[in-house]
Length: 337
Ligand code: TYM
Image (cartoon, rainbow, N blue to C red; front, top):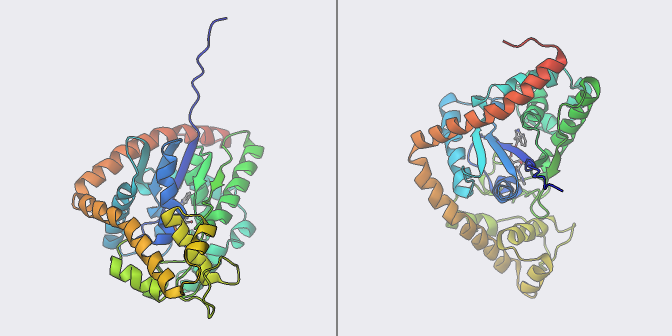
């Protein structure tokens, strides 16, 4: 029998990250690291989520600068433009176009249940805009536009991913199979890096307390100092337990940065105090970030190059996005120019 060659498309990955300031250690361990790891095995499409960023008031010049900086952070972390597609969300109009169609297929009640909307509207009570409310429909559009199979995210974005799946399934039921149903890809350790001053909250750069988060720009001294002042408990045992939220968070960070298993970490620090452990965590984080910081500094010096890369990659993204949009408009009955 003649041998058949079956050319199968690799499974696709999509994810994005907001250029709303310098990324945190949470962004890095929860998401960016997996963006990099997944490019080896999958066809990966990534973008900055600058359209998402304007759901909160942004200064235009700062947003532009933060977008270039974020682009450089991701390249410095190991995104390889030979292996993935990486662009700025605003460069590909189809994100906003599909978001509109999905908005018309997303229920008010579903959006009202989103915890991020509740948190952000409490934080920005003077600007509870419609975009903040419909944000998950734009996020669904980002993912569904590329027919992504997997979406690397931290634990805090899981609810949005579940909504994306619901909206995609609903759309497929009404209009016929159009979208691939995506799966979340959440790391086993450090899926939710917690606030260093309040381990009940997730680490977030919008926290007013600078000591509560680690930014990718922090110096080794700042990093070690922040870890040394991290809130723990009155015990002195380095043990992974739910009631020891501060220590549990530090163990997860240490595990994620060193690749060591949790029982091995408990054994390593047996009989030692929290002081030694906190310093070790700070040193491990500083060592992990050092080469990325050096590379990012080099890359950000050439904004023109970064913008050219983003534009060339946006062109590649447009080609994929166009196929989905043609299908969607046809199914919905919308005329195309
Ligand atoms: P954003 O920009 O807030 O965060 C980017 C990624 O970092 C993860 N992350 C964390 N992971 C662990 N611990 C933390 N403390 C922590 N903080 C943030 C987030 O889970 C996320 O994966 N809506 C998204 C951006 C987005 C997107 C998308 C993601 C827009 N479109 C499509 C996936 C697919 C957001 O605001 O992430």
